[in-house]
Image (cartoon, rainbow, N blue to C red; front, side, top):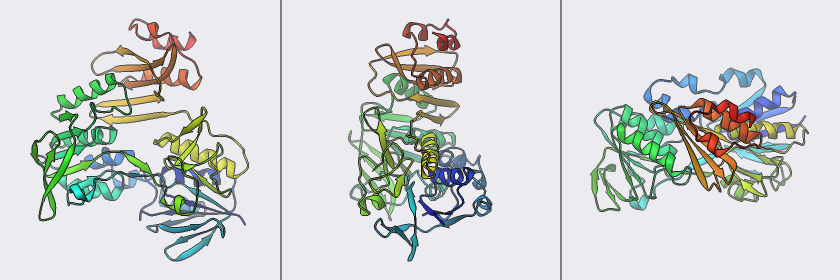
Length: 403
């Protein structure tokens, strides 16, 4: 009987094993996770869960009983120490498990501050796992002072939660503006204004020189502009990197993640990959997407290909971020844009449309679900819209889908 082993019990791993069973796979399935809890949602960790608005059980993607009911073996709290592609085995806690096909859904890992500048002090937190957030939660109390290092979505979401909890927040971003790598200046301006309206001190073009500790715990920070801060804790949001150590040790080809073909197969014919850790062919190049929708869609595609579907993965990129009372929804990929068309609505409602010439590439929609829906449908269909019409507030957006 065929045995499929999946390493990485996150969104992609959970989606993949569920899809295998749904599509009729009757062989053995083993899902291995380094964390001691069943697969759970990561986005609410730094938002609803940290705020106390979501119980632990609601984080779980599926009840633990689901895996037993589907005859899926869960091995939790047991990181894999080695993969042997020749013998087709994985080593987990001293146990050697044979596989017929192996799927790596190992996700990504947060980039950390070096110990040389105080990154190993107590009170310095990443925001990636349940353990990270549980460790940080007691520090997030009214009146405390937090330093957020990094002005990407991770840092901004952490800043919003801290501010809502009554924490004084200073956020530093070494680049010229927040969100510089991932969004247009218009979106940066929108979120800078939003955070400052909630009392967040945003300092752009300013980096962290070093952290200061007392008795092994962070108590201050020296910034690149020469200023000193007294802080109670630090949140590090300086990006993530694909978790490829196991794949590299096994000799798999790496190219900004585990290099896979359109089907999701790695350089080893019986090893596949999906989710944050995988880079796949896209428009003549390679792409790696860090998002929940990609983790689900790519994992389900790989599940189908394990069963012989032979279908290349075609992404339909979309993302979201929740900050205060604003829901940002992003459709498409903005790389290569040459101009932005803005639509302003009432209150905090706005959308920014990325064009390359006359071709629509992406949309950032803030509290504007209609703009997101229309933009996503156009992009998914390979269509565009007249920029002049997009920018005219008198034009009904739904009509753009007929142009």
